[in-house]
Image (cartoon, rainbow, N blue to C red; front, side, top):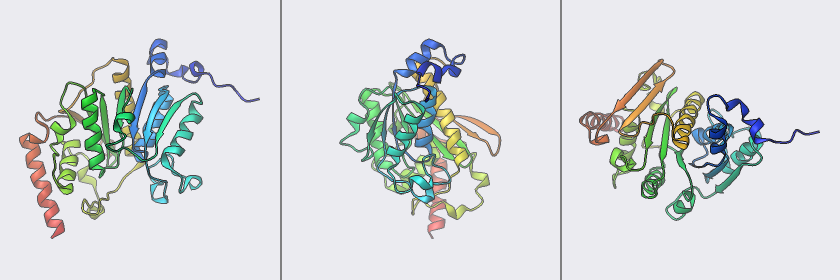
Amino acid sequence: MSTPFQYEQAFSRNIGWVTAQEQSSLRGKRVAIAGGGGVGGVHLLTLARLGVSQFHIADFDTFDIVNFNRQVGATMSTLGQPKAEVLARMAREINPEIDIRIFPEGVNQDNLPEFLKGVDLYVDALDFFAFDARQQTFAMCARLGVPATTAAPLGMGAALLNFLPGQMTFEDYFQWGELPVLDKAIRFVVGLAPAGLHRPYLVVPESVSFAEQRGPSTFMACQLCAGIVATEALKILLGRGKVLAAPHGMQFDAYRNKLSRTWRPGGNRHPIQKLAIAIGKRQFARKAG
């Protein structure tokens, strides 16, 4: 005889760190996650185990064997299957009552209003190089007053930024505008992790290529991102606990056992950021030459 699903019992071990009333509140929250790769999949499953029960998820890609090192939905049995559909199945295995709306074309300018409609939080899990989609999504969040969070898996650690309604926007922080892709890439990595804790132990530098839009990854970093993002989500959704928003940021690196909290007024307009961007450009020029 199968055991019937009961929400209160399934998430009863959360009680203590949250109250029963807060757990009930999480049940009614809706979170939008764009991207079903390394961080997107584990974000969804972590939030599902927290008891969040309504999601919008967007991804147009299918699982490939090169995803095995970091993506929770990537297995031999899911090769070639749509990422969003696989992850939705996995989330429903945790909570059969979960309400998930899939956006199989990913996010774009046309579907963003619907993707963000009625959501309480946006979690960024887009591919690093999905600059247009990311820029448009965060801009829509700012217009609609939707809190947004992103955690970058860097090395064997994670770097966090929150963008909250009425505070510094993604565009104000990163200063992308209509810049070329390479400039956006450099500004993005510099802005995500001003402390750069991950850089000293990159043992194969040529594995990073902005021009070819590729870079190395680890599952440890993705898992750390999910733990951090779910904690920020809990604080934002329940309205308790201190939430630092951009230009404040945080990076934790497990390999180096270091935590750095950063504050960059003006975002990438800050003198330290401008210097880091200039150095990044010179380094790329030397590699290209």
